[in-house]
Amino acid sequence: MLAAARTQTVARTGGLVLRAAGVSTWSHVPAGPPDPILGVSEAFKADKDPRKINLGVGAYRDGNGKPYVLGAVKKAEEAIRASNADKEYLPITGLADFTKNAAKLAYGEDSAPFKENSIAVTQSISGTGALRIGGAFLARFYPHSKVIYLPVPSWGNHTPIFRDSGLEVRGYKYFNKETVGLDFEGMKADLKSAPEKSIVLLHACAHNPTGIDPTPEQWAEISDIVKEKQLFPFFDMAYQGFASGSTSRDAQAVRHFVSQGHQIALAQSFAKNMGLYGERVGAFSLTTSGPEERAKVDSQIKIIVRPMYSNPPLHGALIANTILSKPELYGEWEGEVKGMAERIISMRDKLYDSLTHTHKTPGEWGHIKSQIGMFSFTGLTPPQTKALAEKAHIYMTADGRISMAGLNANNIEYFAESVSKAVKGNL
Image (cartoon, rainbow, N blue to C red; front, side, top):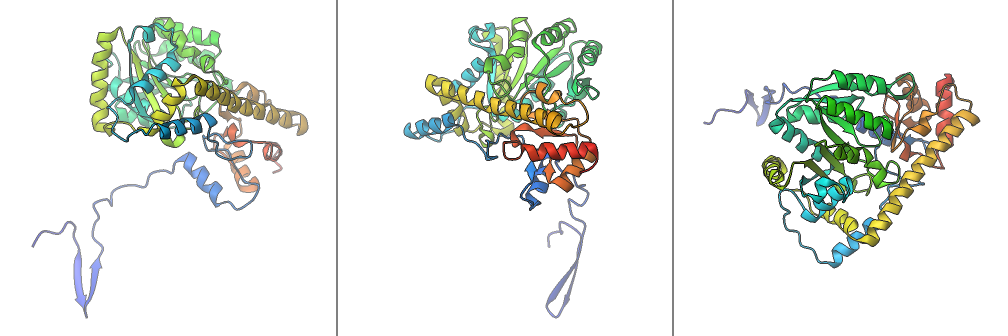
């Protein structure tokens, strides 16, 4: 008789089998903490109040609060269906036309690395996958340091991604709670005090979660410090075009660093700017010294990707590449991205006006308009966000971060009124 996988007692009484509970193989596994974003969404779904608002989800919503599929995406899908494309596996590094066009979108077709064919690039499972590939590559091959510095705060998934990749995670100052703005002096001081040749993660645009970006002049200073300290810049660009409405403007930091001679790593996502959330379309790239070095880096990226997920999905890459490669669709897409960005900017203006002029809300609210992109750090405290959820049915993360895309003409006044009451303490 084979030995039982676990200890158990069996007794038979009149044909009834009674089993005493044994020790499960997984009894030692502790319950993990709930995801802060998913927790907000779950609480929102359980709420039956018709006034409820979900400002936790990081996905664009139209003026009626509904998911939005871009017209350019629909047309691209029609073109793909008409082409009778097959469903064969992609190569390990993905659809070659897509990765080339993704690199062109990020770096610019006039950039030296693009023209010299010195960008090693792979398709990834959206931006998260790009960061994970990059983290694994740096942990394995970056010769100078296994430490990566993240802004404080940063996207919640950055820390586990890089820790699981084998890097040590440290922080540099970024957010000033007093001004609800950029702590530029603190940022510069921390970067200057970091050990030489450390890795530093930089949000290319629309910093998540604060919505606070350096100015072009500040980016130039950051570039100089990174060069002086010989830090290695790793850009996360999840919102190109979605932040300002201009793909070129949102890539300014990346392109400036490259123009100044930095070798960089770059994670791209097409979830937000093309609305391809569920398609998981992204790219990871590294600039190299030339085609020969690029080929060697490419070969090692393949070795990392192969045991991780073998090769990336096809459909989303076909959609993105169809848009990027067809001038008429590219123009339509740029117009739609601009429209999405402008709607969010208009919500910022309306929220600021309502808080300051209509409701005379105590405090300074200029950061609502000066921040950029999908998210805003409102400055609301955890007790205030809790009160808003429990009494006004408005859901956001405990740190006061909201998705501006969740606001529209139908709910923004109720939101502003509720926030004002929470700040005044009479909600």
